[in-house]
Image 1 (spheres, one colour):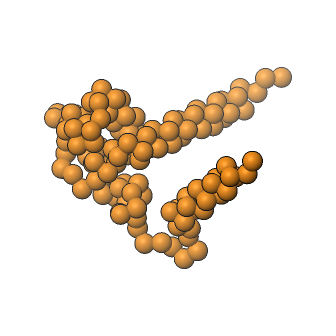
Image 2 (cartoon, one colour; image 1 turned 135 degrees about the vertical axis):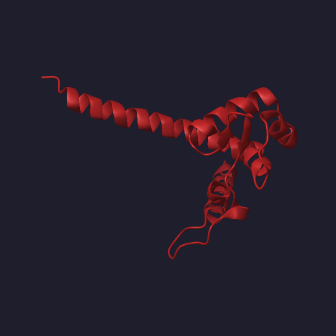
Length: 126
């Protein structure tokens, strides 16, 4: 027998996982292209301003900003169409603004450096 409550719960979990995956991809783009760097400590800017500051195509920056606003990472002023990266969010998106480590916390840079070394070692194997 089909359990509609169970199906609804699964559909909700699946949608949440898909949205989280999409956010991860877009956050990675923000890091790799320097968009988070371009917005850090900046006054409210238009998508054109952000694109110019990051040296990117405005059309793609606008799409990225839409995803970041939807995810609640970037704030938008709809009356001026300007975007800001709140410092409270930047604290978790950029190492310069990283909050103090908690006891027992891991340093992401060390983990990334370790992965790079591991990948280099694997690629050196014939």
